[in-house]
Length: 178
Image (cartoon, rainbow, N blue to C red; front, side):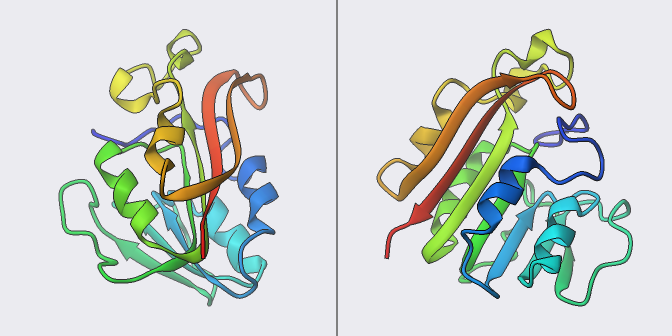
């Protein structure tokens, strides 16, 4: 199953600390896309913060009831057409998901001043468990290369975390220049 990762370093419902940290840098009231939204932990956090959120996943059964300012979209973005063609977002949030061909599309889908907040598994995670398939693990510096020349990097980490479970991760917060 390309791009899909069932393991999560943050548990099934707790928002990523990385996403929560950078969400305060999104334009107030802005439009945010939550890619591979799963159970909706980030979409729901962002909705509570007052953002208009689009949450997309190929399986929305775990999402539950969506808050009023969350629009759910069921789509297979790996095999089908990009459902947001021509649309730009003030932020795009991606966690625990990697489909490399999508990276340029995400960068292009940001408004000027828009923020990309991305966190997923990196090479080295195989020693902690799943995901261990190299297709789902970022190479060293891969997120930096994905945004180079297009976005200004605000923060980047390539590290091993212990909580809530050991995992090798890469994280980036990067802004489209005006």
